[in-house]
Image (cartoon, helix red, strand yellow):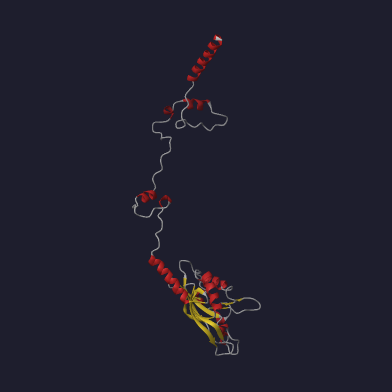
Length: 288
């Protein structure tokens, strides 16, 4: 029993001696990363890893711990804000100010004014009701006509008499295709009206059928006024390289809201304007 105890104590003593002779492993903050060598570290790498860190790195070597990020200008601006102001959102973004009662009142007043001037049940169509229009020729006249001043915020050079069906088609065409046809930074602000309701025959030819103008279902547009004051006429702009593409695009787009669209290439009567009407044809839409 005594011999077994002596033998055990001797083994423990040898283990302690062997342990104290091992090199101390450095903490993660100072231990160098092993070289990326396939098949294990080389003898040279093992020798370097066993050396003290101070002996390997020069005195000017940067600290191994990451440096703190510099404080952003946004955080500094948020910290400098007066304490009585409204608290800011995350990352120091200032919240938008609440609308003033005066601003809200102006918006509501503007909408109420537009509602009073709306016709055809659409706030975007501004004008006045004209009632039933009696024609001086057989076949002329319009029921429940309206006199339109603007559509979708785009004014007409003069109020045009038409039916609500025509007014809605005009509004759809302007809002979708005309207003930004020449660029969003230079929008169309006015349509140059060549003709609205007019009790006459087609192209004013004697004995011809009554024109759709005589039924309040047509409107002729001869040009477009832009925000910067420029007026693009159909007569000159159709062949002008700077405006031809836009004019042709909106002429083509009209063949959708309207069922008859005639332009400068249709015939000599329409070389200076777009004729737009909502007449129904058995063969479908007629666009030239």
